[in-house]
Length: 361
Ligand SMILES: *Cc1c(COP(=O)(O)O)cnc(C)c1O
Image (cartoon, rainbow, N blue to C red):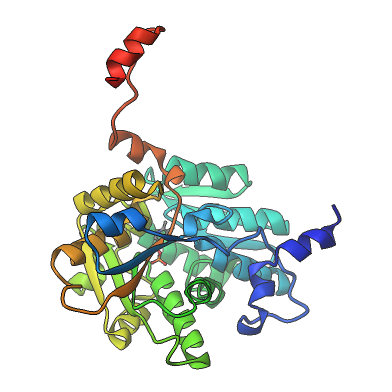
C-alpha cells in the first residue's frame, strides 16, 4: 500500500483540525494516528443507577500511547521540530513521558524525562525506556520535577513539553471538538479528572471554540472536575506539599493550570470537587465490570465524581441530561492496581470435573 492510500484513510489530528491549530505548511506533522477516540454509551451504568439521561465515555486510553497526552504531544513535538529543537524535556507522573518519548522517537529527536522516584507505574515507565528516552528519577515529587524542567528549559536548548507549553493545550482541545461532532451537539455536563489541570483547561477551550460556530447547538457544558482527596489543592484552596493517592496521574500538589481550571469551573457553572481513593477504586471496578472498559485509576476519578453526584441527588428534578465522562488513560498502564483489586485466578487440577466444581455449573 502506498503512503498516500493511508493518508486517504487516516488524517492526523493536526491535518484534521489544521484551521484551529497554530500550524502552517512549514510545520512538519509528527503523528502516530492520535485522536478520533471512541465515545462509548454507558448503557449498563445508566440502568444500574436509574440515571435520567445519557452517559458517554470518551475513551482516551485508545490513543497510540494509551492516554490523551498524545493529542497535545503531536502538536508540541511538531512545533518543536519546526523551531529546530533537537531535544524535548518533561516532568511526568508517567503518561506525559510515555507520549513525549514516542513522539520524540518518531521525530528523531532526544527526549529527557524527570519522574518522581519509585512512583511511576511500570506500564508507563516501560514505554518511556523502550522509546529511548533518557529517564531520570529524582528524589522528589512531580511538582519538584516540574520546577526543575522549567528551569532547565530556560537555561538550555531543551523544549519543554509539559502542559505549560501552550501547544499541548491547543492539541488537547480537539477532544472537545470530537465530542461535539459525535453527539451533533455539546453535552450538558462533562466529568473529568484534574491533576495538573491542563486537560480541563483544554476541553473548556475546545467547547468555547465550537460554541462560537453555533451557540445554541453547542451550548457550553458544565465542567465537573475531580481531584483525588489526598491531592486536592484546588478544592482545599492551597498547594499540597505531599500529595498522596493511588491515582498516580493526578498526584499533583500545585497544578500548573490552577487559575485556568477555576476559570472553566466558574464560567461554566460547574464544580471542582474531590473523591477518595476508595471511591476511585469502586468506580474503576464498576466501569470494568458493568461496561467492559478498562481505564486507569486516575481516569476513574471522573466516574467516581459522577457516581457521587448521582447518589447525592444532583440530577434529580431536572430534564434528562447528556453527560460525558473523560476516561483519560488505559487500564493496562497500571495492571498491578487491577490485580490487587480483583479476584485472583484460581488453581484447578487438569480435569473437567474439578473445573465444573470450581465454576459451579
Ligand atoms: C495527565 C493525566 C491526567 C491529568 O490531566 P491534567 O491535564 O494534568 O489535569 C489524568 N489522567 C491521566 C490518565 C493522565 O495521564
